[in-house]
Length: 348
Image (cartoon, rainbow, N blue to C red; front, side, top):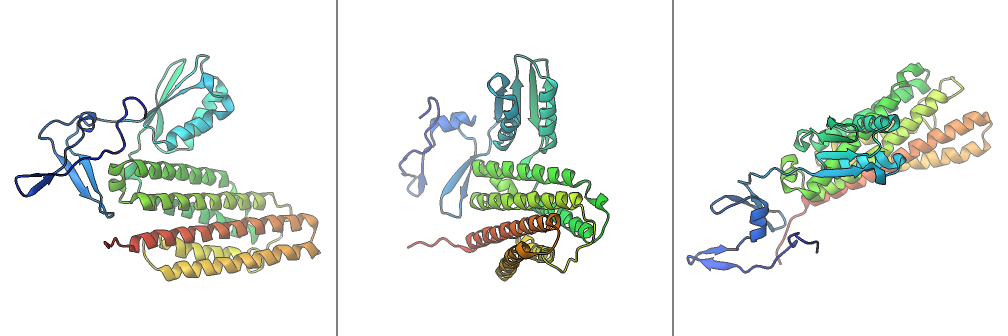
């Protein structure tokens, strides 16, 4: 055990006082760490599992998570990764120091990080140090609203891809990179919030999401993020296609996009409501779409189309197929959440 850190659990005896009241003493170190004194109040919560949770109500302490980065120990190409790691760890303050100062490339990395996240700003700066703070309160961004925003961004890209492939102007896809960045920024925010819920009881309460459910939401986030990657890939394929002739949205592989869209509407609506039959329906549709796409990709081997068009259609089919597969994963994750919501604790 690290020196100075309190134990994660202690065994304490239940005592009877006054003939009818049971009491358990609180660890002195816990009292001191939360700035409590005699006669201060604590809140006792009865959790669904039957366990009790004690929350300090009167503490005057303000806690902020600080992460310090020494760039003399980090390769320049890894600085962005360390910044993202600090953000996902729930830091409110990131202090960056460099004995050599910050060159143009590093400053570009800092701007990229700030643009890729939510609520991060530079609060102070000197020649050899920079301090970043996070101004966003986790409870101000409901998890399910952010998930819905991710879905809307992805589905709007797919809608624009359909328009372009059916003969529309490619100009409508020119902002696809910006939309991809926004999807990634929301993904990072959600992963940060999920981590904070798993670690903090107060954030768990303010967001109204249990720790178990938060861990499953983290999986939903990753499924949506991968769908976003493939929607972006479809945008790039559509922009770079040399043949501008329209493709029928009712022919393979484009027809499977309609199946993905209808199935995702059912899955997204079940982020909140409980209609298991809709999840079952969506999964069945997606499985059929994947089978149709597999058959289409096999048929391309003997196709008489130009090789460039065969390659294009093959890559389009692969991205749609992967989007359907990630949607199936999402459906299974939603079933897990619903099963947990429907479960009850029994005593034997």
